Amino acid sequence: MELESRYGTVRPGGRTARVRAAVLQAAGDALVEHGLDGLDLADVARRAEVGKTTVYRRWSTTTGLIADLLVDMAEQSTPRTDSGSLDEDLRANARLVVRTLTDPRQGALFKAMIAAATCDERTAAALHRFYATRIEEWAGCVEAAVERGEVPEGTDPHEVIRAVSAPLYYRLLASGDPLDESVADRAAAAAATAARAGVYRA
Image (cartoon, rainbow, N blue to C red; front, side, top):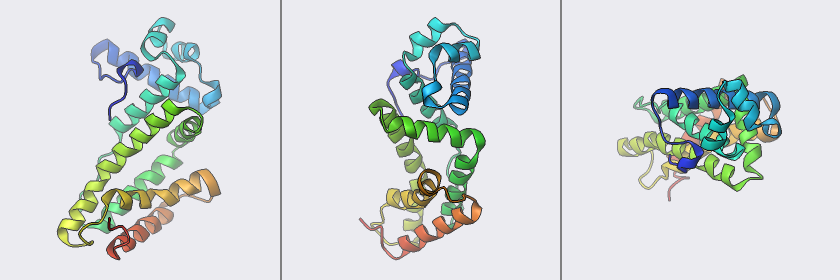
């Protein structure tokens, strides 16, 4: 996933990499503690123990910082599984989503970023790119299922992966109902059943 380099998204090395890691960690901490409204570049610089000019020069705005946080999350995300079974792969995907969304830090970060995306186009674009990257990563398990004959030819892999996570995000953002492995497994099973029935054929 590529974002504009002015958002600090070029993968650096050495001291530059350490500065980026420290700033992103500090930005995540600030988002968890205070939400988007409390995110301030000067405070992030203080937390990261780097110069304010470094942060302002590299990231420019809080939007730029959030965008780079999303890039980092995509870079660090767990790769898809390849179990040889669509049901198992979708279950692994759903459980990963639940673990992420229920994690005290990651869940809070995603809520803050989704909230930011509703009112800022650049943050929305960064969030959309993040999810496009993750969906593309996991779409491979559906493509493999098509090749094995588990689901019909013409099945849209991206739609299947979206169907797995959609009810999980609904619980996080709308209903507030519990998120656990049983919920993840049910979402995965529903998506797999629908895929086998041809629901997601293009």
